Image (cartoon, rainbow, N blue to C red; front, side, top):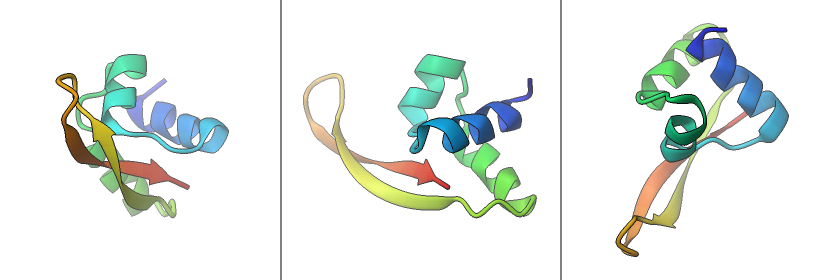
Length: 67
């Protein structure tokens, strides 16, 4: 299964996906690039900026992608 197929399947079955989840679950390091190509293929993927804590407990903002 390609990374594009993996991301699309996750979005369809599990909802939102952040870069850290993509890395931890699937080893995908450039989620934004994959989302770009999925959009080029006609998928209506939305981006929401969410606040999370980094490994040091500091607040930071990341993209969360949904269908």
